[in-house]
Length: 453
Image (cartoon, rainbow, N blue to C red; front, side, top):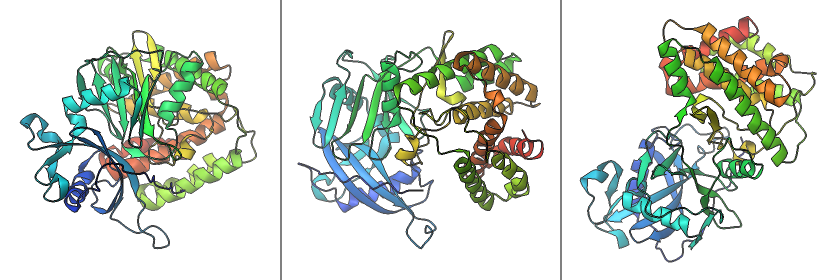
């Protein structure tokens, strides 16, 4: 995987944080849900930028490398750049106890407490004011859609459901996603919704304000979008239908239509790119399979059968043209408000390089991700209801075909390969993070390897 060069920014007007603050951050970072080190201690922490965002709040970009097994060739484990907003006070009230990081003992911050400012309502309010009034703060740039007027005084609250980022909801009218892992370049979660809005696509809440680092190595730091207060995510709706013994085929059909609407708008918004070809795709999928089988012994007996799914692509026609896609589509990435489906979270997989997440790919990848999500939902209750998942899958593909003009089910070899690739990814993820869930993707692995899908 190509390594992204870290950001290097100036730090005007603010001293380099003292060693005690760096030590506090090294202890605090591994416990955060969005930290990629997964509870491993931080071996090295380099402060790339420090900016006083407003009195009592520091904005930091830090490069952190977790301890662990060295990468091939004996090099240290790769690190990541993280965005931190730190509140600074003499004392922290009990309501901010969860945000507490520690007390600094030396330097200009000696005797002061630092904490996660995104948990502080006052800091959250001031951050919104920065977004309401475009401008600069050191190396940071705050920008907005001039056609949208965001009102002042909206009450903030943190959204606890976030995993790889942090989000604040303002007055149940707007939601600000603050990216935690930062790479140089435009984040797809700003780029794609903006492009879709320009195409008149109403399936995605359009960005109204955002902030980033300055050129020449600009990086997106956060995006403010309309919030849908009465919406429910697709995962919760699917589980509710299962619990009530209801079908979900109508919703799945309409979700397929929504997915096609987004794909069609993205194809219109971005120039078409030549596909790398199925031979290259099959090779990359096979390499991921071999790496996953090396890490998860339970996968190894199925490797020969799974290889056939990828081998079936070799020499075949490319299928639908490569284009910009969502990149990580599943039931948790869609919202239903009334009878309308909306697609959110276009960031892709944060662990992948930004260039890869912004590349053109087959739309079948998104479709396969959603089909796997129906299977995941059906596995959440016992007895398992495979027919429920099968009917959802059929309805979703039929809805997609009705809008897109081509039916994913007619691309059997391509769809099976992308489903298999997704299931292999799921096996690796569950083995590392949720071993109790491993039987869910392993059931798909057995189906895809033994019965060909």
